[in-house]
Image (cartoon, rainbow, N blue to C red):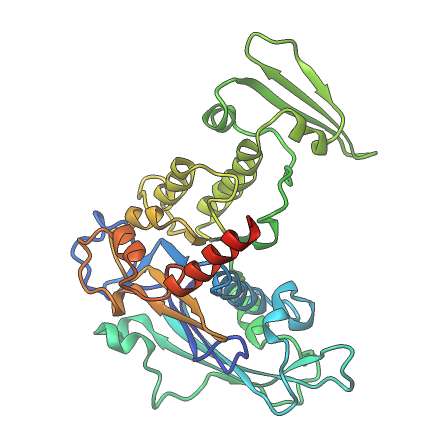
Length: 387
């Protein structure tokens, strides 16, 4: 299953509808050189999608919306999804609508899901799905790019009636399609691990990965006793005695934060690449140097490495990382003036051959650099502080 586009309407955090297109909107010259994944003759998927903006511009919130939608169409009850925080502040009159377009086998689907807050008090939210429809059409019927998301004059193949006996009111009707086709979306969400840095997956990691992250490490092994769940870690640096460690938390005393994050991120990357799934990572540069972050992005853009069309969705403060992207339609600019706006770079910048980092830093895009007025005020505050 490949997600093609998501549209979120009436979320309180966002000024307008949030629209994230996983497919190319600009002309495709050569899918091999542009590192795209071909779903059909008219549908090409961007394998790396970046969200960039200044602090508190809405990057994390945008990633949480994407994560929420993936979990919802993977049959998770919406009240148990961690990222349902995106639905906070909904009144009983509010209706949030998600339009989700995805491809599976020889069909294109559209799922329209309406969510409301039906809590009986103000202490605990209770979100329910009040309306839902699912459409399907043959992928062969698509003749132009514009027709990919056109479901006008088609009758839904399934509709929520409100009296389903065996379907909880916070679970999507996608559960029946998933059971029928034996499908789920494979994804790894690292959003909540941005500021937590210890090894979260235990196992024998490829030695090539360990050496890539830290060439001074000769070996790293985990001996796990499944019965009592004890862990013994064997760590050996080159030309040093082997070190025995009894807890993964102690590794931070021996490994750099970049190495620990690298193990977490690249192991998840390997699993996502194997499945052709999705990796969601917030602030990719956190604990990483620029070259490591660039390497991760390049893996998803390499046809030999990324054979199944896996997708990385990342946020960053580093404008230099934008120069890894040959296209503009896989970059989104986030801004926050009381409400979040998310705009695709291709709608602002038509040429792909301009260095994106320079455009971003120049202030041409507006709101992508701290304002001169705020800079002056802060400068004056520093002067007063030193008096």
